[in-house]
Image (tube, rainbow, N blue to C red; front, side):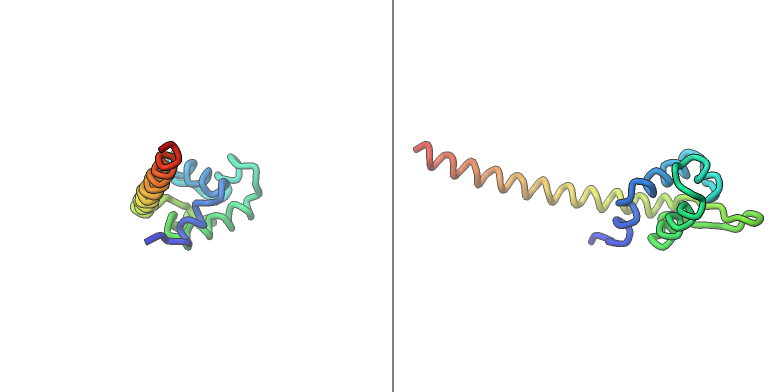
Length: 109
């Protein structure tokens, strides 16, 4: 089953970049992320809230800021869902191909 909230969170290019940065750096704050992205710290905070609601990141208090880390098990879940969807689409495309080839074969005869 596809988790729409998860895929909505991952669907945004800025949030995907944030996940990449958090994975590469082992975590980060909204300030550290905004230093590496072309968006404001406030925008980063909003994106992080979306990622946190989807379960892709978790936060802990770190002084006056919150430190965010990626939940790798939730990321693995997203990868598994994508693999399942890819397989389903491959099967659909193969059926379409067989139908098209059968139609072409009847036209050629």
